[in-house]
Length: 334
Image (cartoon, rainbow, N blue to C red; front, side, top):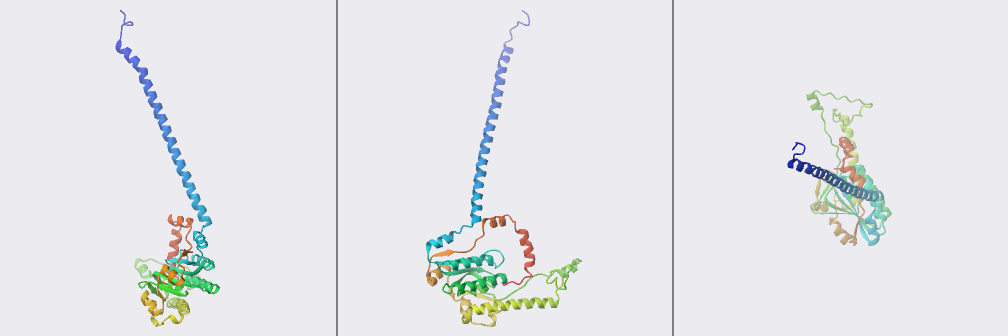
C-alpha cells in the first residue's frame, strides 16, 4: 500500500473539525459586533433623551425668567383684601433685597394694589449704603403721600441697625422682638493703611495723580490731616442727614438723649422704651392684630434664574472683588 492511500484517522478528524472551528469563531465575532452595536444604539438613545429633557427644562426656566411670572400678584387678585409684605434681608447695598432697585418697585406695586390694606417691610439688616437707604426712604415718603390711608409698618427680625434703621425710621410704626438689635445711628468709613509695613519691606509706592487729593484714602499712601478732616466732615454731614430722618420719622415718640445718635445699639425691649420702636410683633401678628388682614402676599422682588446661575458659577466674582477693594472708602451706615 502506498503512502498516499494509507488511512489516517487523526488527520481526517482534524480536517473535519477545522471548518466547524472557523464557523464558531466567525459566529462569535458577529455576535460581539451585533451586541456592541445594540449597546451603542441604546446609549445614544439614552443620551438623546437626556439632552432633550435638559433642553426642555432649561427652555422652561428661561421663559419663566424672561417673563418673570409673578404668582404672588395672581394670588393677590384672587384673595382680595390682604397685607402686603416686602422683605429686606442682608446689607443695604446696590445688589440684593436691600437695594433701591429691588425695594422701590416692590413698594410701588404693593401700595398700588387696591387689595392691599397695609404694607409691611420686614427688615433683617446690619446696615449699608446711605445712598441706597436714602433712595428707599424717599420712595417710602412719596408712597405715604400718594396713599395716606394705607399704613406702612416695619417688622424687625434679628437686627435693624444703621442703614436698616435709617429705612425703618420712615415707617408709620416699628415692631420688634424684645431681643432684636436696634439702633446704631451713626456713619463710618473704614480701611487699612500699609505705609509702615511698606517702609519695613522696602516697597516704594508709585502713585501718580492730577490733583493733590486724588489719592485720598489710598491705603498705600500716608494720610494727611487735611484729608482726615475732610473725611470727618463728610461723615458728620451724612450723620446729620441720618439724624434728621430719625427725628422726622419718630417725632415726639423719640425720647432723645445724646446716646441715641452716638452709634450705639440696643435690644428691642430697650428700643421700645427709648421710642426707637413702637411695640412687639411679627409679620403674622401685625397683619392679624394691627392691619386686621391675615392674608399676607409677598411683593418682594426676587432674583431671576439668569442672575442666580451667573452667581452660582462665579461670573460676578471679578466685579465683586474690585468692588470690595474700594468699598471701604465709601461712607456706610453700619
